[in-house]
Length: 409
Image (cartoon, rainbow, N blue to C red; front, side):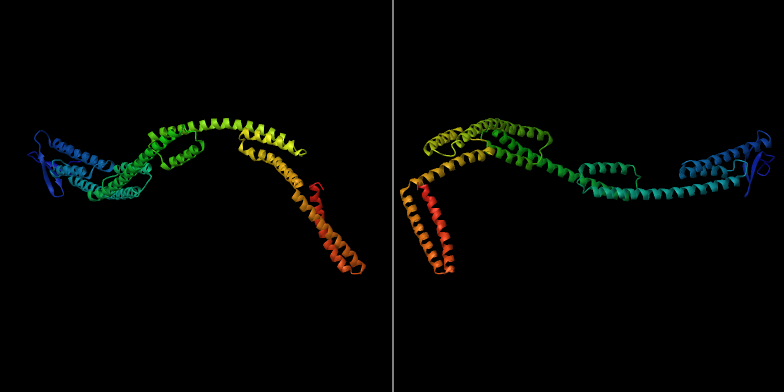
């Protein structure tokens, strides 16, 4: 750089710098030649140029704050204004003015970006508040609780807003979390109360089940166990630490009873199957008495069979009607034979049967005579009518004669 346009040294050693406002005193130089003086102050000027270069790069390439950048500009500007250097001070001022404009523009950009960021943060926090308020009414206790905790972490990661807005949103957010927490606490308190009530109810059911486990009243006790099971299901669940133990005791008591009942029923079933075999043998013996030829002897034999039948006892229910039906069929055969014998040996019945037969025989003979007379007279219509009447009387006579044969003719 040529020193002549920007500075000079007078005979007294005073150094001047030229500016748009005229020459300004830079300082004095007594130690050497004027060229050395100008070179020294030019190097100081170059130092300011380097400082401005560095500041321009920092403003463009780093996140230097506007406040720090402005302070640095003013520091350099003060040095320029003190004109203790030789060089184009007006050029430095222009660069500093431009740099100040750049810093202010960057300040505005950052302010706008910050405003956008704040608006985004506000919207994000409003969304968090809205979701928290919706979750406050949820009954999905675990999922909603975990989500609310995640929302708190998200909130902490967002920038703070202005104090008023931030406090208002936080108040709503916190209130929603508190409302959910109170509802959840009340729900589980009620659930604990229900489970405690269920535990007490089941303790009583277990006590009764254990008391019944030794009963031998199989039907009533089994029915009561069914009622206890229905009561158990209606009671709801007790606390986890009690539920399994109570259930094991309850089931254990039932198992004792039903195993004992099963053993007794198995023994009874075996006995009844044996009874069925014996009764089947008696039925075969009874059926061999048919057809009845000697009523008196057969009746004595059947009476013996009946006495042995009654002494045997019960048979399985599904075979009862079948086996008893076969014996009843033999019994009906004896009843019919006894009724026939009674009719045959009853004098009054025999006399009534003979009287009826005689009357019917007389009526039949009379009708035949009338029919013959009608045909002889040529009255076929009357003869046909009497013939129909004869058919009816003859049928009655045949039936009466058959009955009379039962009395031995």
